[in-house]
Image 1 (cartoon, rainbow, N blue to C red):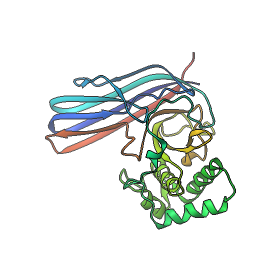
Image 2: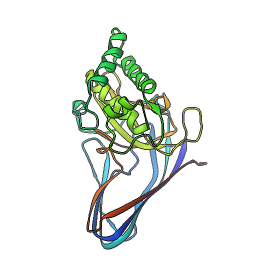
Image 3: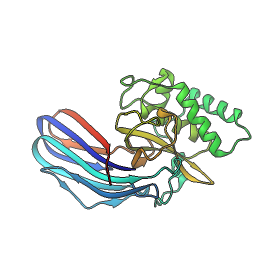
Image 4: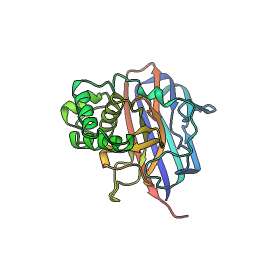
Length: 272
C-alpha cells in the first residue's frame, strides 16, 4: 500500500519564548514492511540539525529556534509503501539489546492488579509458546481497558488506566508493556500513524502500539486498541520504553509560560 502523510504540530506561546529546543523522532522507520519514498521535516524560522540514529534504530533530529517566538510549526510530509508482515518487524537495524526493554518506567510499572492479570494469562496458557502468550496478553488488555477517548491524559500510567478500565491507544499500549515485562517478555512502545483500522474504517491517524520480543521471531507488534497486529495500514516512526520515551516530539523552551498545542494528522492512500 502506498500512503502519504501530512502532520502538523503547531505551538503557540503567550508570552513569547526566548528559545526552543526539541528532539524529533518524526522519521518513518526503514524495514522490510515499510519503504520510505520521500520524507521531509520542516519548521519555518527554526534550524533542524543533521540526524543521528539512536540505539533503538530510530532517526532523531534536533530542532532549535531563537525568539522571541509566539508560534512554531513543525511540519512532516512524506510517502511510504507498506506491506503486511503479520506484525513482525523484519530488517530493522538497531543496536540495543531486547533486554533493555524489560526495564520498568514510572508510566509502565506493574502494580498488583497488572501483575495479577498477567500471571492469570500466563497460567491459563502454561503450555503455550511466547507468541501465543503475547497474543493472550494483548487480548486481555483489550478486554480489560475499554477504548474511551478523553477518559485519560498524557501522564496516565498503566496502573491508573487498568484501574479505571478505560483509555486510549497510549493506555492500551502501556498496560500491555507492563504486563509483558512482568512475565519476562521485553516490550516497548511504538509511535506512528494509522490509515484505517483492521476493518478499513477511518481512524484517528496518530497512533501507538506495542512491540513484544519473541525469541523465534524478533519484535512483533500488537495493537490492543484494534485487537490486531500492525498491517499495511500502519506507518511506524519510533520506539521507546514508554509513551514519553517514544514521543515524536520532546522539548523545552525558555521564557514565556503558556503553551497551546494544535496537532493535525492526515494519512491517505495514494496511487502509484
